[in-house]
Length: 147
Image 1: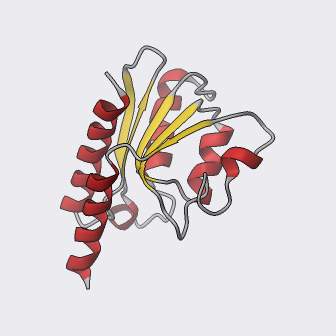
Image 2: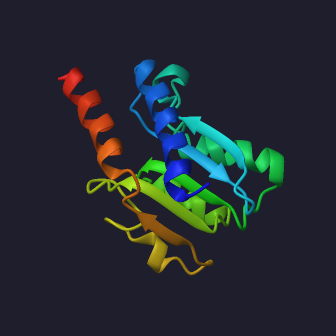
């Protein structure tokens, strides 16, 4: 599978989030062989837990299977991670992050805090823009239906 194929799986997770009234953010983690080891979508409202972001849920699932360090894993997410999720990504030693849409307000890997380039605890490769129009449309449609 290629980056776009894995991002389409993350989009399916985001669609599942939207279907239950959650902000449509989906995440998939794959190992070095390209096998999906975890997938999740936002469950903040359903769980009444502010930390139930797609990335954190997927990281926890992947760590249950692979151990604490997720070296050689790639995380695919529909929206650039926030500071909390970016910190978890860096601390779990995920090697690569691929995201669809930038989060110009809260994005922490490239847009605001730029943790991908300032973190001294190791390197993470960040690739952006995969399926960006689909990811942006999901978010715009969700929020326009709320207003």
